[in-house]
Length: 87
Image 1 (tube, rainbow, N blue to C red):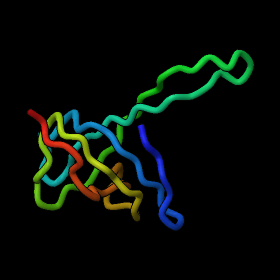
Image 2 (image 1 turned 180 degrees about the vertical axis):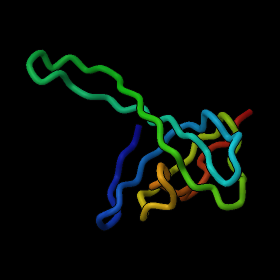
Image 3 (image 1 turned 90 degrees about the horizontal axis):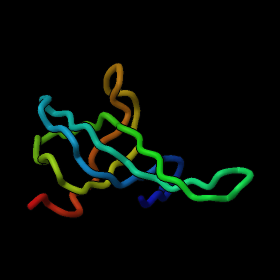
Image 4 (image 1 turned 90 degrees about the vertical axis):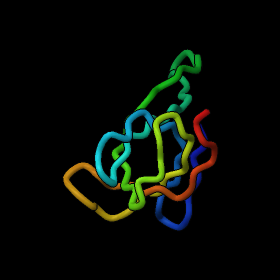
């Protein structure tokens, strides 16, 4: 749920929900937003296709991802580091 900026590149953290592809993982990022009128906070989730060069991420891992140049039709993110391994 953390979002930070490094230069002009966004940095997000999320949970790996699929690692079935070669050198690609699907990461689910959960963010909290506030309703514009009522100010009630609600959760939104978004999936990102992330480049994992060494295939080291497994399903359930918490990772940090960074925005990068387009690597394929859908991949625009890459793994920065693995924060917590799945149990």
